[in-house]
Image 1: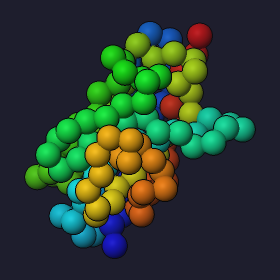
Image 2: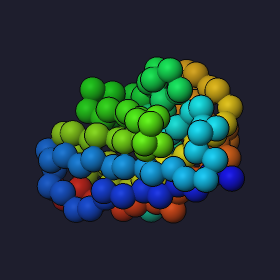
Image 3: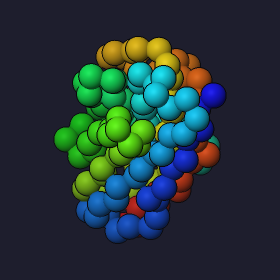
Amino acid sequence: QVQLVESGGGLVQAGGSLRLSCAASGRAFSINTMGWFRQAPGKERESVAAIDWNLSTYYADSVKGRFTISRDNAKNTGYLQMNSLEPGDTAVYYCAADRRYYSGSQSLSRNNYDYWGQGTQVTVSS
């Protein structure tokens, strides 16, 4: 089992930045792929970014050039640096992880992740 805990959410003005963290525990050494997803009220959960064990990264078109995903395997922690935030980025952000290796579009599919955090709220005011 793997446990994931997100932190770093909050309220920020448009154009501002936030950095989310995702701390993994339990059998964290078995994680190959980590991802970030978000869900706004009344909408489906959507992909944001993903990163594999080799540090290859993948992004949804809506966040390319603004968000950066990273991970520190030694610390079993993933990060999502969010810059140039927009009101449309307002959502609950979830960290996800899986022991399987995914790349490209597979890594951005929420159906491919077994482990999820509880979510952290990000609110961007205009």
